[in-house]
Image (cartoon, rainbow, N blue to C red; front, top):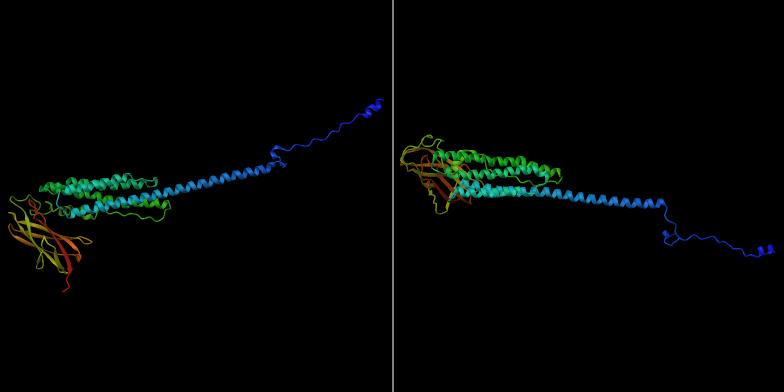
Length: 375
């Protein structure tokens, strides 16, 4: 019986379990990526980040390089504008004033130019200066400072130079001529230091051709000569061979006065326009009188014609003139005057040593030259 009982028991059938879908496959039943594919993806992502960093760095570098070039260009433009103003607004009118002093206090007028030069110097100190332009900036400040200091020195001494104290006037005139050295030096510093350094920095930055502003504040080396300064101020150096060879003037009154200025048969008028027919042999006859009590010698007569592209200046010396006598200096022109252009003719008989009254030593005429067609 046991045999049949065992044989009749039901048997349990065991089924194999099916693998459940992987969560990482999202239920799609796909196999997870292998290690090689994952590594490739990571390398691609890293490469993309590196490329973006490189591009971003190149962009930053390009912007920085552009900003650097712009700063160098801006510096060059600011220096050019400032030195151009210095030449045109200070140097040119100052020397025009020295050539032909106007009515008024000359010291105050020159002080005005000194104030303007100081403002330009202060403006130069505020220029935004790139590192590459630091050397140029130092030299530029030196040049601008020299122009200001030269004007200050001349303004301080101009009254003494115009005084009747011959010894003091001689000393002041010599100091003014010395101050002119500052203007000459400022031009040299600018042309030999500032411009080459600016150009070098621009070329190193590979900016290309840029306009460089030239400068000429000082008009000519003749202003280093004391006699030129004295002539401009209507003074005569007592040590340059005046009426007594540089000795102390003799007692008594000294002085001359202009009587007339004529061209041919035409006597020039100070209160009306004058028309002058010009030919190669045109001459001006300047007649003046020794109004003092002493004989005088070596009297300089100077004529300036201004209004054309370049001033004309001629000078003649009258060897001697007795007290109370008159003399005539004949002045021909070394070059043709501007034709059909209004000009100012200034004639001056230089003061003699000991002369106190000088307002009748100078005459000014407005004139117009026309070509002589008769020849």
